[in-house]
Image (cartoon, rainbow, N blue to C red; front, side):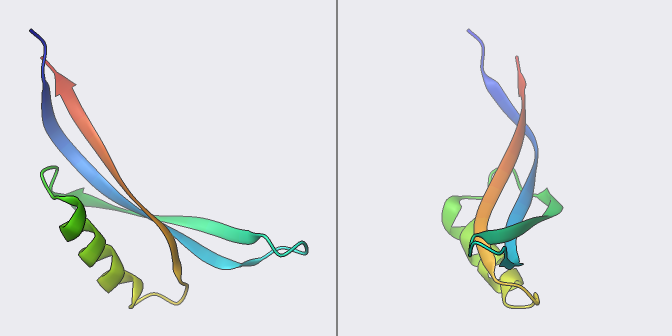
Length: 71
């Protein structure tokens, strides 16, 4: 039977850098590699919030992107 084995993860922070003429948010992505693939949601959220406090723009969305090997 096949299974997944975690290889790597990255954290992607979607930052709101402003709004367009219609009031919709303008977003940019900041990606950080080297995240522990086994990090749980609470730890990931806490780190993203801490990093967000150091940035010039507010965090709009937090994503953890995992890469796994199927074996």
